[in-house]
Image 1 (cartoon, helix red, strand yellow):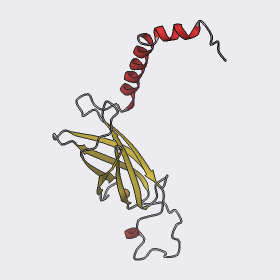
Image 2 (image 1 turned 60 degrees about the horizontal axis):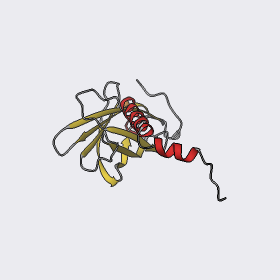
Image 3 (image 1 turned 120 degrees about the vertical axis):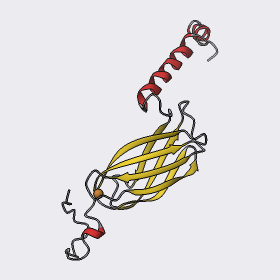
Image 4 (image 1 turned 180 degrees about the horizontal axis):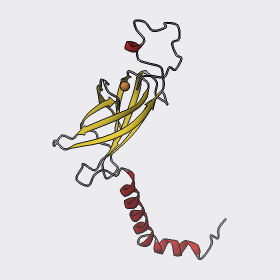
Amino acid sequence: MHSPPPLRHPIFARHLPSAPLAIVLAAALALGACRGDPPPDDVPIQVDVSVAPTPPIVGPVRLVLTITDEAGDPVEDARVQVEGTMSHAGMTPVHDSASYQGQGRWVVPEFEFTMGGEWIMIIRVTLPDGREAVREREMDVVGGPPPQERSSDAVPDDEGTPEAPDR
Ligand SMILES: [Cu+2]
């Protein structure tokens, strides 16, 4: 217990300040470069989107956006708006806003997915200085047709049964 390896320790100690630090920095820069891929003139922030439940279902879901700046620090002061839309004709987009929950996490407690299928989520982050970052994420929403499509003459007793929506 009293005799540590005589050679390894001093060698590592001598090299620590220079080479390994440079390697770590280079790796961090490389990681940052391939993650968010925003357009070059856009605000370099990163938006990670998670949803509960996963996969999202028709109805209210909880969206959590983790927003970080180019240094990886949480974005704490911004206006964060979410628009959900789909590519088909006649779609009414859904708008909501996220509020800050701390640690770079922004939450939309009840984002209303009005129908099942492929949604395009557009997240707009406006910083206090007026700069704006826009990010898009696709989400596949599970569930049947929306209430307005099964209202009048639809069969009332097949709730929960996925029905092919008109596209
Ligand atoms: Cu739709």
